[in-house]
Each structure stands twice: as C-alpha cells, then as structure tokens.
Length: 342
Image 1 (cartoon, helix red, strand yellow):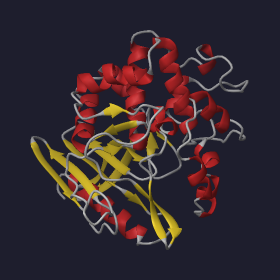
Image 2 (cartoon, rainbow, N blue to C red):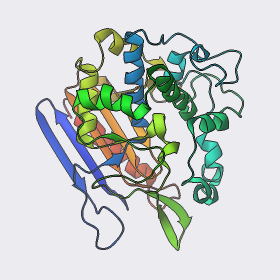
Image 3 (cartoon, rainbow, N blue to C red):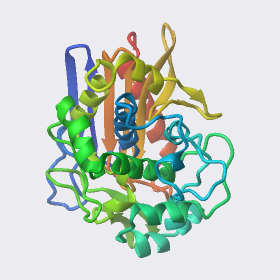
Image 4 (cartoon, rainbow, N blue to C red):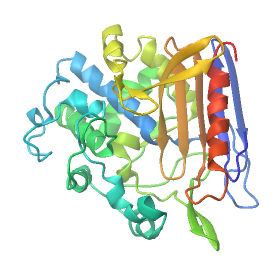
C-alpha cells in the first residue's frame, strides 16, 4: 500500500488468526517514533455505529421507540412540521442538512483553509450545531447528516439523564471489552496516549499540512467523537454480532439496509458494501470515518469471522499525491482481508 505522506495502522482477523501492522512515523517531525499497531485513532463517523447501538438498546428497554418522531422527546429541536423519526435519523433518511459544510465552507468549496483556521478550535454545543445545520433547505432521499446524529446524541442524554460519554462507556465500551477506547470530552481537544498525529493538507507550499490535534472534540461528538484502536474496533463489531451488545432482533433492525443511490447501502449506523470476491459477490458491513486528519475504515463479515480495521493520519485534499491510487490500494487491502479466497 503506497502511503505517500501518511502513516497507517491495520488489524485483520480471520477466525482466531490476527495480523496487525503499522507503518510510518507518528508525526512529520524528523525525530518522531514509528507508529504501532495499537496506537489510538480518532475514528470519526465509525462512532455512529456505537451511538446507534445505544439507541437500539434504549428501544429494547422501552425508553424510546425508534418509530416515534424526534419531537416526541425533543420538542422544537428540529424546525419541521414533518418530523423525522428516530429510525430515519439513524439511517440518514431524516432529510436533515449537515452542519459541516457551514463550519468549513471554504474547505468544502475549493480547499481554501480560511474557515478551518477560524473555526477548528471553537467549542459548539450540540444545540448550536443542530441550529447551524437546519438553516439549509431539507434535502431529499438519503442524505448523510452529522446534524442528525448530534440530535440523536441529545436524545440519548434526554431519556437517560446521563452524558452521552457515560452511556457509551457503560453500554458499549465496557461490555465489549474496549479497554483502549474512550469518548472525547467535548470541552477539550487532543488525543490521549500514543497516536499518529492527525494532519490535513493546506494547499500552501510553505506549510503543506496542518496538525489538527487541537480540533474541538465538540464538533465530532455523537457522530464522530470516539477515540479507539484498530483492535478495539474489531472487538466492537464482533460484539455487535455475537449477542454481547444487541439481541438478534436488534441486530436485524440495524442490518435492515436501505438503498442510498451510492456505492453502499445503509442500515442503522452501519454501511453495507459488496465486494467482488473470486467466488462471486459477498456482502460486508461496518463504517468509515473522517475526523479531519485521521481516516478510518472498519468492515466485517456478517458472522464476524473476517474483519479489517485500518486508519491513516494525513488527509490530502490538495492533490499532493495520487488519491485514486491510495483509495485503490485501501480497497484491495480490504478485499484481500475479507474475501475468503483472496
């Protein structure tokens, strides 16, 4: 796998066999130590699978009903007469605009980093992020929404009376044995423990990358605020399918995948991808995540026997390297890890 400027960590499992590897330095500093396979990563939107697991548990306990409209629990949060249901928000079918294109408009539009430098260290409350997102017109069909997952995090806190991080720790991290995983304090920044430094390209030849370690964790929160390792991610998805975190009925709801019109289908906090294996097409589930510096992919066979979680630490939005080649190499690594005959 050609990494360009990135460092990478990966863990692959095939039944009881485990292969873990790391390549590259932890930072661009010339004295930096090399990354290790157990280093921590901001997993970004892979967090959505964990938040969804909490909501499925709350539904099973009768604390919420996934088919209730959101305003049954959080009246007035979303300014819509036609309120999305909890289930629709979990599957990005709630027609709620995303807030990130507002926080970083110049980055999304043309790669200009002005808005990033202005906003990346700013604390935003969940209510503020939702208000920023919903100022746009509602999209149609499948529309990926960090705003929607922020609202879902608020729902968890509303019905439990506890901070979202406490619910994730008690309901997901502890029962799944995720010893190296934590939910980042939304009032802080940075990454605890050994980790590759997250970088984002700038387009400035005098400063080609910026260290995004001080990104406010508030901006990630329910849709992206977990820090983990590749081993813990594989443990999490294994616990999702083996009955540790979800009942068979809850897992069936989570994996009721809907077409998105894109290269993947989506369930409740889960992607479904189809790989062309030598024996024919096979289906796998998981999620990916982009935390403005770290990029993560975590995919698994439906029985949990074949797994891969991998991440790298420099996101290139300015064409310094061949992005298509990196994507193709990552895709091939995933296919090799997951296809039984690869």
